[in-house]
Length: 144
Image (cartoon, rainbow, N blue to C red; front, side, top):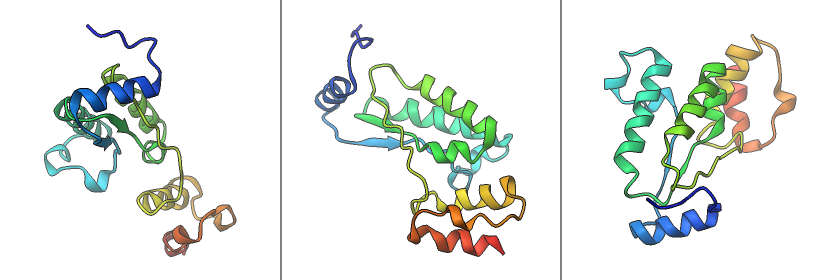
């Protein structure tokens, strides 16, 4: 068994690149809009968890790293953050994790907008908190 406890991120990354002959990293984003149909009959968080577990199990021998985007987990509230912890714990210790903590990019702006306007703000106008112009259209379309 390979010791990984004292390996830093770059040691793990380089080891996986060499071992798997791969520069592939896999995003672990619990986006309900992208969840396969076979997981939709489950309770949402349980379905997302099973889907992410499946992705990890099927790709661990091929990746150099995993990249969960924290915003997708935040948008699911406390259950989403609990899902993040479970997802991180499921990643084998020898695989490095790139925790994507940016907000308001094109891939996540829709789910953030829904969270802000439908779950958190309950109709309040929070447009002054927008950071990037390219994601504003999504927020403005939902702000009514």
